[in-house]
Length: 67
Ligand code: SF4
Image (tube, rainbow, N blue to C red):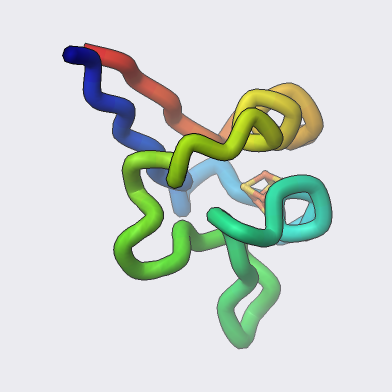
């Protein structure tokens, strides 16, 4: 059984918004445009678009780990 943990590094995020556009079931943007993971979706919700969002992020700010 693997578990996935997704987070956005707020130090490197440049508020471009691609994550929320690419995988809106997992990511949103805060009031300042920075990417955030929706509450309860830190496991990626089984959404294959998360991997696309990781690739699409221009700042490599999405941290994705599988344990
Ligand atoms: S795509 Fe990356 S840089 Fe853009 S808002 Fe999302 S986490 Fe931040």
